[in-house]
Length: 82
Image (cartoon, rainbow, N blue to C red; front, side):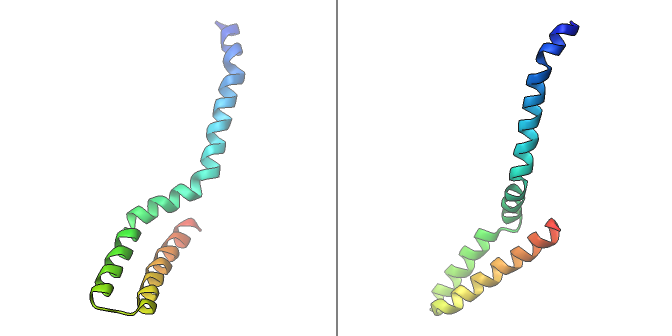
């Protein structure tokens, strides 16, 4: 049993290393994706765009409103990340 355990040790180490590398490389992206979902960023942007276009708002004001939403989400992400 001891030798069998020693036989699998390098493979176990490779799997563990690959897992930890994957987590460390993609953690920031996954965190941002999760926060976008949690903050309903895309839904809020779509709702604001649709409402403002129905009212006949000019494109510059729509862009400013979208930029405001993106900035709010970015502030939350920065606060959580640091």
